[in-house]
Image (cartoon, rainbow, N blue to C red):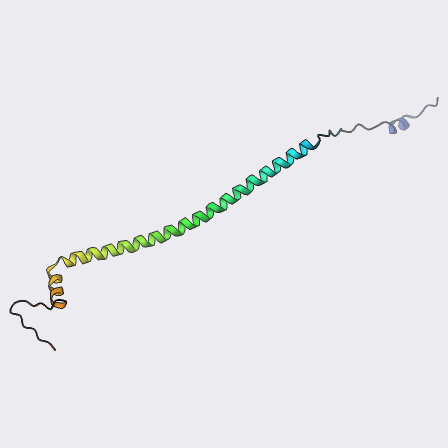
Length: 113
């Protein structure tokens, strides 16, 4: 038998490579399922976030409207309290009696134009 040189024998030796294990369809299906679950979870979280943002904007607008209504009601209350104090005075009663009811004091003479 002929002797071969070392370099010739090395070229024919198979190179050791990592063996890819075939996991079958179960591994791929599991990865796809996990991916879909993550996508649905993220989409749900984003949808909830935007819904809450919309609700917050609506509540803020409602709060501004209610604050304005409260200020108007407080101003009206102050006017009514002032009117109540004025109505309880003798001067107001006399003015209404003269202007709206045409009443006069005894021994008072009225001159009309």
